[in-house]
Structure formats: structure tokens, C-alpha cells
Length: 356
Image 1 (cartoon, rainbow, N blue to C red):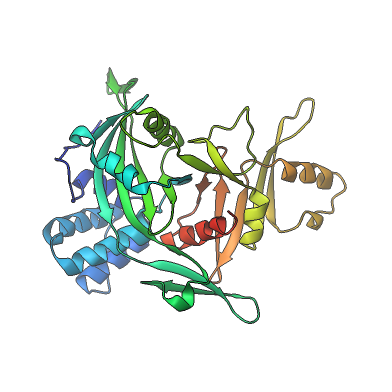
Image 2 (image 1 turned 90 degrees about the horizontal axis):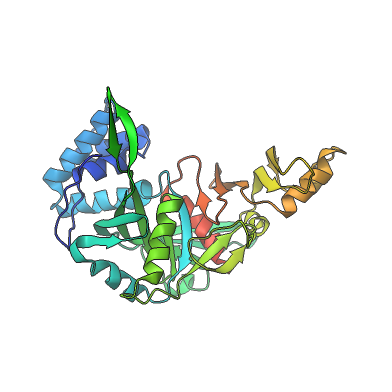
């Protein structure tokens, strides 16, 4: 395992190694565009590795420059945080106490049940809002704003991430792997993020399910904080025997309800079925909005049953004329299979909030 140097509490800078890991989540096209914008050039011909290294080097030199910091923070907020992570939602009414608890960790560390957690960096990401209004013909008018004025307060709106706390989890249990001709012990390391949005009690947790669940089950039991009332927002069909949410669910959002709110369609439906031998089915679809669209005499009734008890379906939808999709995880979260910028994630969360 790579050793990650730790800094004192109050760290405001990225560790080089962890910054590289996060930048590698992003497409080469986005890295090229960002670097070209920084250097005000039009043609960049570099490998993905070289792009990442150059951006990290540029960050180390320019991190105290206000103009660079603004551009870099916007890039992290709009493209890096949303890349390649499942998101789980929790309701935190006392956000101030929640953040205070994390800031109060001794040596930036917290011991969970299975993992040790280290606070890498806390980012303040500024103000940016997504606002949805309806036109006279009922279509959506989508606006990105730096603040919400009186004329927009009656509309649906949600801020982009305003604060992000980036953490690292170290598995305390080692596993043995071969390295050349010898067996060595390694400890798995995972990154994950806590995402807070301005004036919103919903907190997003992005990362590996096992890590996220260990963090919150451990946090709830920690006597040094007031987090025992944390509740999760569970998306999908909740099964009291099989579902394992990251915290006790407060609100349940049906997949069908979310699909309708997005004016979306089903790309996959994954569901248990009540057969004697077959216990689960997965339908791959062209993009089904209504169960009546399937007319096959054998498939239609099975699909109807699968739709009623679906657990891990994939939803497709359009945003500004482009196609996007996400899957609902088995334990009530969201996962964007293809890269989705923060604007898309915010749009989907805004639709979820509208159902609460």
C-alpha cells in the first residue's frame, strides 16, 4: 500500500498522490480542456498520465493564486467529485454539529468497526445553484445561478456542492497477495467524500458501499457526537430481510416515481421473481416508459411482476438534449455508469427532493 503522508488538522491542500487518484477518474478530454484553459492554449497532445502530472505540478505552484484557486475549485466541484462513485443520501438536521465532530478528530483520524478513517481535506466550493422553472407550455427552463433571487424562490432549486470533506479509509484487516515470488500483506485503501449543499439538510456520501456503511454505523454509535438521529433516504424497494441501508431509512423513494419525475425510461430492470427455480430476472430494454409498451405474450406478465418488485434498475433520461443514465444500487443509492458532471447529479437530486 502506498504510504500517504498526513498533515496537521486544518489541512487546506491536496496530497499529491490523492489528487492524482481523483483526477484519474475524469476523462482525458476534460483534463485536456482544463489544462488548455489554464495555459490559454488550444492544442494539447499528452497522455492521460502526463496530463494528470502536469495539472498536479501546476496546482503545487499556483495553489495560492486566487484566480487559479477559483478555476481549480470549480473544476473539482463540477467534474471531479461526481466521477465514478456511488452516492448515498442521508438526512442531517444538525449539520453544524456533524461538521464540528469531524473537525474535532484527534490527528484527523476516526476509528470505525472495520476501517480507520482519515480526513484528507475539506473544500469550500463557493455558491452555484441549479434552478428549474416551468414555461407556459409546461416545459422546463433550467438555469445555473450564483445566488437565488426573489423571482426564483418559488421555483425548484438546489445548490451544487458547497462543501466537500474528502476522506480516506484504511481496512484494518490485511489480505495476502503475491508480489514477484513472495507473499505479502496489504491493506485496502478507499477514498470517499461527504458532500454538503447550501441550505439543504440532505448530505451525499460518495464511495464504496462497505466503507460508507462502516463509517456511519460507527459514527452513530460514537458517544462523542450527536449523530444518532441520522436517517438515510432509500431509493428502490426496501426489503427488511435483505436491504442494508447505510443508516436507518427515513424516506423511501420508489424507482418508478423517480423515473416519472425525470420523464425517463427503463434501460434495465433487475428484480427477484416468485419462481420455483428462477429466483431473479434482469431485463435489458431499449428504453421503456410504460409497461404497456411490451406486447410479447410471454414476456409481458413476467416484466410486469419484475417492475413491481424491482431493486437495481437502470434509468435513462435526457438533460438539455443529451442522454444520461444511472442505476439504483441494491442498498438504496445511485450510481452513474457513464461519467456525469455535477450538474447532472444535482438535477437528479433535485428531482428526488421534489418527491420528499
